[in-house]
Length: 318
Image (tube, rainbow, N blue to C red; front, side):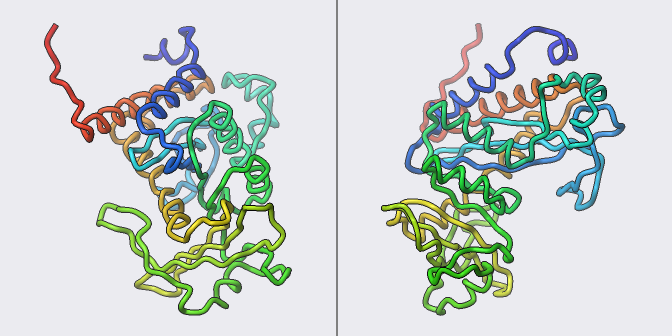
C-alpha cells in the first residue's frame, strides 16, 4: 500500500476525473443536480504531514492537530457522492518552501484559501460538463463575496449560507444586515416546508425569502432565504440566493437542504471506505489515498443506485 501511495507511477488526477464521470453517469441530473462544497478534518500527530496544523476540528469541537481537506460533492434525487478534493495548506506551510519540499509539495503550489480551492473544483466540474443546476455550501464559503460574484459571472445559480451579520442590499437600495431584513417580514411570509429527509424523517422548518439586490440581470433573481427552527424560533439560519427569477421558495429550500448530502458522503467514506484511515505524510500520497477512497465510495453509490432500479445481478463464480 505504501508503494502504491508513494512510489508507483499512476495518474491521480485522471482517476479523480474518472470518479467524477462515473458518478455523473450514475446519478447525474441537470434539473436536480447540486454541487456542494465543504471541508472535513483528519487528525494527525506531529508536524511533518503535508498541511498539518492546529485547526478547529468540528467532530471533536475543539482545536486539534489536523489536516483539512476541501471537498466537492454531487447530489441529485438519484444519489450523492464526492467528486473532487483539495488539501488546504496554511500560510505557515507555503511560506516555508523547504518544509514543503520535504513533504513533496512542489514550489509552484502557492497558498490558496478554502473558498479559492472550492472555486477551482467547481470550475473543473463546470469545464467537464457536469450536469447541475445549483451550488450550495455553508457560511465559510457563502460569506465570501468574491466566490459569489464569480458564480454569478458564470451564470451559476447558488444558495449559500451566510452569518446573521451578513450585509446585503435591500430593495430600498440600503445596506442592511441579514437578520434585520428577515425581521421585517410579515408573519404570512413564512411557510412550513421540508428540506429533505434526514435520519429521523423529513427535516421540517419554517422558511421565508426576501428579494434583495434590486439592480439585477434580466430574468435573474436575488433573495435572502431564512430557515427558522420549529422548537426555537430564535434559531434562524440565513442564505444568499441567486438564480432564475421565477424560482419558487420550495426550490430554494430544496437546494439549501441538499447541503447535508456532503455530510452523509463524509460519514459514508470515513466509515466504509477509509477516507480518514491513512498513514502517509506526503502531499501526493494524501491525494492518492483520498482519491482511491472516493473511488470506492462511488462504487457503493453505483451499487445503491442499481439496487434502487432493480438492476443488480447475482455474482457467478469464475
